[in-house]
Length: 165
Length: 415
Image: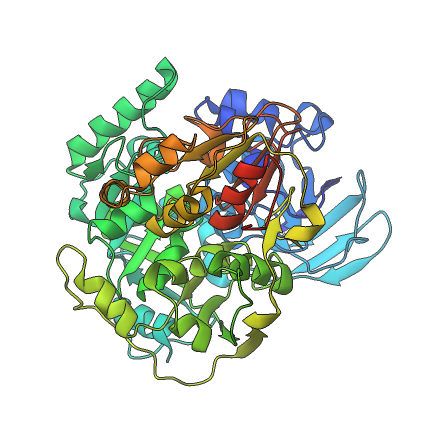
C-alpha cells in the first residue's frame, strides 16, 4: 500500500472539533467537506486535490471520537493522512472508514507544504521526494491493513462474517 | 495480568492476552449521547440495518440538549427517539443529566464490564474498575450493535502513582489538572493508565472520578482504579447493586510507573487553547470572566455545589458574572434541594440549569461572544468549542470557579 502526493502541512494538537466544527456535524457531507480544517488553512478545502496527503503534527485528531472527522477528511479525496502522532480514536477511525494513516514520530521537519511525499503503509517507510529526507514510521498492524483492503470496518464485517460472530 | 488484560482475555475467550495483540471481545455496554447516538444511527441505518439481538446492551442519554432551541435540533432528537424505540434501546430523554453520570447513577455500569461509547471521556468508567474505551461510530454501528463485539488492541499499562498530602486548599481537581501539565498532552498515547497510590486510595468515588476523566488528554486508551472497598461500597448504593463481573489485577508491576508527590501541586487553571496549558492560578489571577459554570463530565457533582455554597455563604455573585449551575444528574439536584444548596445558591445570584452536560460544546447553552471568558469545571477548552474562536475557556476546580464568580475575575483565594 503505497501513496504518493502533495503535502498539506498542519500543526500540533488539532482536535476533531476543528476538522469538522460543531455547527456542521448535522449537515450533509457535501456541505461538511467544504469546511474541513478551514480555520487552520482556508485554502485547504478549496484547493485540496485527489491523492494529496495531509501531514499533521503531534496528537492529531484529539478530543471527540466522532468518526465524521475522518470521513470528512477522506471525502476531500486525500490519499492518506500522516501525523507525528495520532490521538488513538482518530487513528482507529481512519482505518475503520478506509482512510490510510501513518504515524512517523516526532519530527516537525520531515515535510513542508507542497512537498511531494511517499508513504508505504505496510513497511512504515516515509520519504519526502522533494527533499530526499526519509524515515521509518509505525507499520500498520496486519489486521488494519486487512480492514483497509476490505474498504473499512463495516465492509470487513460483511466480507469476513466469522470475525465478529 | 492486570485488570485491563484480564477483562479483555475473559471477553475474548482467551486464557491470556499480551500488550500489542488485537482481540475481538464481547462488549457489555454501549453508551451514546444525543450527538453520537445520531451519528451512530445514521451509519447503522445506511450501511448495516441488521437486527440488534441484545438492544439492552445499548443506552442513549440526551445530555447536550435539555430542550432543543432550533427545529433542526428538535429533528435530531426526534430521529434519535424513533430509532431507539424501533430497536428497543433504552433512552434517557432531556433532563436526565450528563451521559456518564446518568449511566452510573442508573446502575448501568459495573466493575469488570467492557463499556464503549463515542464520547471521548468514556474512559471515566474505569473509576468503577470497568474497561471503558472510546470507539468510533463505525465500530458501534458495524460490530457492537449487530454482533455485541468490538476489536481492541491490548494496551501497555502505565501506573501513575500518587502519594503525599495536598497543600491546604488544593482539591483533587487541581491535582488532576496539574498532572496533565506534568505528564503532558498525548504523552501516554494508546496506553492504559492505572491511578494508584495512597492519595488515590484515600479519595471518595466521585473525587477519584476526576482522574480517569483526564486520561484522554494524556492520549490514553483507557484508565482504571483497582477496585477496593471504596468502589464496592459505592456499587452497593447503585440500582442492581450487583458485582458479578468484578475483576482484580494480579498486582504485578506496570510496564512504566510514574510517581508524583501531590504535595507539590498548587491550585491550577487550564488556560486556552488546550487542556495541557495548565498554570498555577496566581499566574492568571485577575483575568476578567463574564461566565462561570459548575457542570460537565467532571463538574456538577454534589461535592461541587457544596463547595460553591460554602464560598458564596454571605456573599453574592459579581454583577458582571453569570454563574451557571448544571447538576450532573437528577439525583444530584434532588440531594442539593434536600441540603438547602439550591435556594442558597439561587439567592446568592447563581442560576440553576436542568441536569445535562451544560455548556459542553454550546449546543443548548454556553455560547460565548468574542472577547468573553468562562471559567468552568468542564473538560475541554479548545477555541471555537463554545461560540466565538476569540472567546476563552478556563478550566478549574469548583472552588476556583465559585471564587472567580464572586470576584468577577479568576481568583484562587477562598478568603
